[in-house]
Image 1 (cartoon, rainbow, N blue to C red):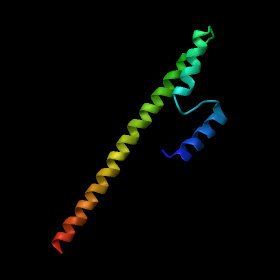
Image 2 (cartoon, rainbow, N blue to C red):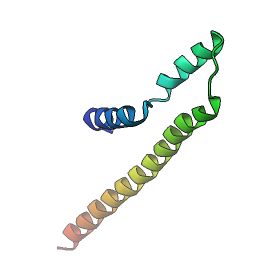
Image 3 (cartoon, helix red, strand yellow):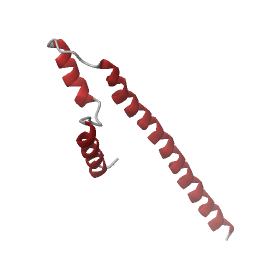
Image 4 (tube, helix red, strand yellow):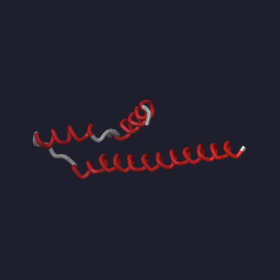
Length: 84
């Protein structure tokens, strides 16, 4: 994801929910708050980590499909050039 798209998505999410897209941003304050004796809703933490892992997995699948499609189209063009 480009920096601009990530910044825009983070700004939209943070403004609406107070959350962040980067799982490290809530993890540090949650841990510090817990250590200092505060009450932390740890049930929310898996959403930050799980969403990032799931999005990374989907992005890798999409990249594989796009890269394979480009490879196949280049191979077909080369085969067509050889025939001509």
